[in-house]
Each structure stands twice: as C-alpha cells, then as structure tokens.
Image 1 (cartoon, helix red, strand yellow):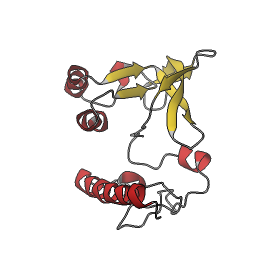
Image 2: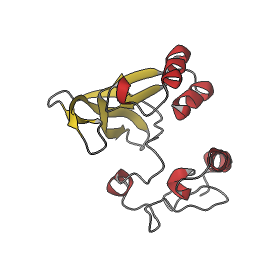
Image 3: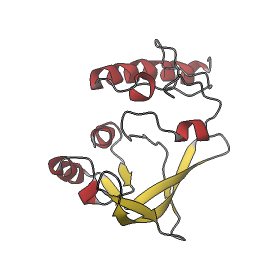
Image 4: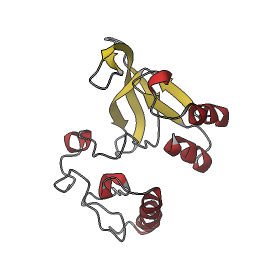
Length: 173
C-alpha cells in the first residue's frame, strides 16, 4: 500500500494494485486501503499477474493477468487463491513496482536467470549506484538488502535514480 500511494504522488496519471486475493485478505490496514481508494489507487482484486509484456526494445507495455477465486484456506488460515481458467487479460502498463514483502521473489531467477544474486537470492548491485550486472537494470531496498528499513530503501532509490538519470543521459554503463 505504501508503494502504491507513494507512486501515486510521484506519477499521478494512474496507479494500480494487482492482488491475487480479495480485499478482506489484503495485508494492509483498513484505513490504508480506504486512503488509497480516496487518493485514486485503482484496485484489481482477485487478479494475479502471470507475465510482463515488453516491446521490441524491452520496455514494459503490459501485464498479462488472470482472474482468481478464493478456495480452501492455506496453512496460515487465509483462503488460497485459485486461478479461473480462461480468464486471461492484459492491463496496459509502463512501469511495474513489485511489492510482495521483503523476501526475494523466486520469479526473479526464473524470469531473469542472468541477473546476479547472492546466497539469499537477493540481487547483487554496486552499492554506490544500484546498478546490477544486467545493463539498464537497477535495484535497491529489500530485494538487495533483505528486510531492512524504509529509510535505507529510500536511500537506495535515490542513489539508483541518480545513476538511472546519468545512464539515460549518457548511455554509459
């Protein structure tokens, strides 16, 4: 929720949360969800992203999603989301912020096998720039540090933003 509301302040055209469970299962306070709605965050509940779609230059242009329904509870007691076959659709998107907790997302290794990670599957970066070993890809925050503070993640973002700006202006990696 923090990521979505912050993104809305930085890029007010449109911000969406795509979440595979329902509103009641969201791991956010009711007030946060309410404030997000009031501020204009668009919610796509019972929806699961399954693929990012890029253009010929590798820029994001869409997110393929599938509708979900809640099935039986999982080990934690939350009802497990189950895919509804044949409900795939695409949401237009130019930027995706993956905000799924502070553990390394296992999809990173599956979708980007050439990106260097450490023994905890966190992305390895130059700590001064946020640059990864993959040209044009930057990272910071929990996916680099593991669970840490918001202040550290913000600092990582600031460093990476400066490096991104330099890279975009000069093309020098």
